Length: 200
Length: 200
DNA sequence: TACTTTTGCTAACACTGTTAATAATTTTAA
DNA sequence: TTAAAATTATTAACAGTGTTAGCAAAAGTA
Image 1 (cartoon, rainbow over the protein chains, first blue to last red):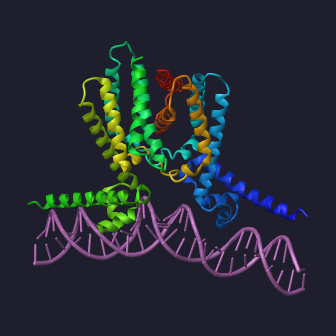
Image 2 (image 1 turned 90 degrees about the horizontal axis):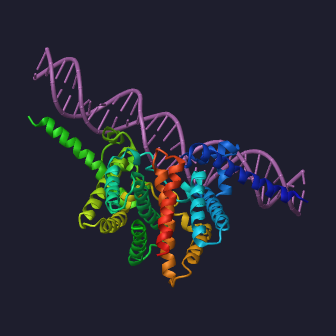
Image 3 (image 1 turned 135 degrees about the vertical axis):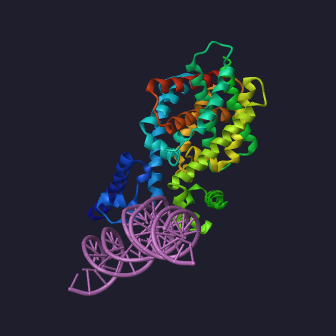
C-alpha cells in the first residue's frame, strides 16, 4: 500500500513548494521582502502549514544559505580541478568565487549578510569619500617612485580596502572570537603581503 | 527676547534625546531591535514627534552611519600623520582601520550592512567548512616548497579569503556598477599581489 | 460504522513603521 | 486682554510583520 508513500511525497511537494515560492520572491524583490504570509499566499495554503515544514522564517533562510555554500564549494572544487599548479588554482578559484558571487547575488548576500540595511545609504554618505580619498592618496604616494597610471592607483586602493573590509567582515561573522594576538597577526600578515606586492 | 532661541534649543534637545535613546538601545541590543516605539517610550514623547525630527527610521540610521564615517576618516587621518613613509602609513592606517572596526562594532556593522541576517546562521552551516577546506588546502600546496607552520597557512588563507570577500562586498555595496572588464582587472590585480607575496 | 490521528484553518497576540485627524498649547495680532 | 493663527503633541488607526493556541475537517485505522 503506497498510501504512506503518497503522503510523504505530498508533504515534500508542499515543502519544495514553499521553497520555490520563497525563492521566486527573493529573485523578484530581494530577501528583505520575503514574508511568511506571502509564501502562504503563493502556495495557496494557510500560514501555519509553513510552520509544519520549517521551524521559523530563519530556517527557510538557512536552507538557502546551505544551498549557497554547497554551490560555492562545488564551484571552487571544479575551478581547482582545471589546473595542476597551486598558483594557477588560486587564480582560477578566485575567478570562480568572484563569478559565483555576482551570478548568484541573492545567495551571496544571504550567506554573508550583505548590504541589507545600509545598501541604499552608503552611497549617500559623502563622508565615505573623505575616507576613500585619504586611502587613495596614500596609495599614490606609496607608488610614486614607479611610473603608474591613475588606473593603477585605483586598483591598488581597491585591493587595500578590500583586504581590510574582508578581514573585518569575516571576523565579525564568525561567532567564536579569536584571541586579540591572533587577530593582530592576521592583519599584519595580510598587510605585509600587500605592501610587498606594491614594491614589486 | 530669547523665546525663539529657547524653542530651537528645546527642539535640538529633543532631537539629540532621540539620538541618545536610539544609541543606547543599539549598544544594548543591537541595530535589529531598534524601534521607533521604543525610542518614543524612552524620550517620553509620542511616536509622531520623532517624525518631526527625522523623515523615517532609516534617516536615524543614516545619522549614525555618517557619524561612523566621520570617526573613521578622522582616525585614518590621524594614523597617517604618525609616519612619513607611505608604507609605514599604510601599515598604521590598516591598524587604525582594524582597531576602529572592533572598538566601534555597532558603527562598522551599520556602515557596511554587516552580519545582520546570517550572523547567527553562518556558523551553523557545515557546508562553509567544506568551502574553507578547499581553499586552505590549496594554500598549503602553494606554500609546500618553503618551510611553513600550520599557523602560516591559516594566515595566508585568511588573507586570500578576505581579499575575495572584501572585493565582493564593496562591489555589492556600491550602487553604480563598474563595467565587467574593470571588475575583472580589480580581481586580477589583487590576486597577482597576493600570489606574488606568497612566493616571497 | 466509530474511533483516532493527522492535517489545515481561523483568529488572535504582540510586534513593526508610518500617518491622518484632532486636541492642546503657545505665539501673534487686534 | 481677547481673538485668531500657528505651532506642537496626541490619539487612534492603517498596513504590515512573525508566531501560535484552539478548533474544525479530512483521512486512516479498528
